[in-house]
Length: 203
Length: 203
Image 1: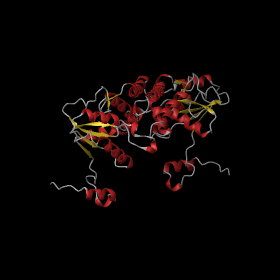
Image 2: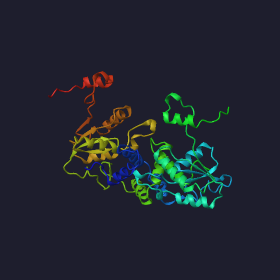
Image 3: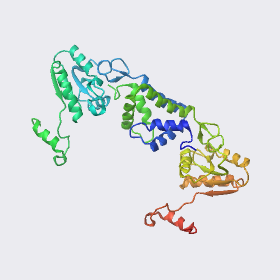
Image 4: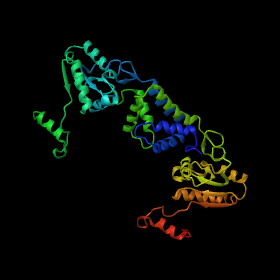
């Protein structure tokens, strides 16, 4: 007997264990869980996944996932269309939206410049950002909200050079100690930047 | 804006988070991972899952998952068809097969008697076991390989009463200290049973 009693089960386990962070034991557990469900539930599950490949659109303006041609943020006239927050991924838009603090629009790059992973500027939606800025008013603010590691900084610097003539203002996320952080446990780079970029105390 | 930028994404996340042990954050992470794959990979993934509902058969003899009418174990003539190991689930068959120590056949109950979960003897494949024994030679050995908790013991006792006239011999798994277990850390019930059911020392 093969390790798996059924080729169908084996293929399901292999598919599930291709997900990041899911080992073959967990995958088997999940596949056997699904197997115990009625066929229509399994089908519902499978088609919800399949729809990700066939029914998802990307907003033609900001590249965010969307069910329509224009995403709900870009089509919202109450939002400030003269502030564009550039982020790496869909996940980042959702994180910033969850704060409830931002009322501008976004531009999703779809990745970050990473020579090690073979991702160059041409693989990201940078040209569409440039085009978008050319269509916009000159006073548009661009917020570069990329991660603080080397790849994020490289991408920010590349973008800065690309768009510096097109944007009214280019800003980046404030970096420093997190709220509630203890000085004792902060890394020295973060603490150092927090002192250099100190802000006026407004009680 | 809704919490999710897209209804399609939301439905995929909800489907994935219906799996046991997968929270909504992990589900979002997995959905976004899938979203980054080419549509044909997503479709392959979804159809592998869908097949669980449509293409899986259960062996007409032992109730094990199978691609054929008769599973690979039941159709293997080299195995001892006069020893039937009764287990709760597909998972248990795979665990016992992985030991390489068993050469008989199986009977998968598809669950265990559990009044709390509303599972009675009628929900399990007990009638098919009885029928199977009636067809078999009288000297067939039945191994009750169910878990050692109250529900497992209840099910074993129920099965014992049902099949005691039909089987040549009814046995159960040896229970005692695990290999490499330290006496100091064994629970007293297991240790007590290990002493009562002590075995001849064969060096």
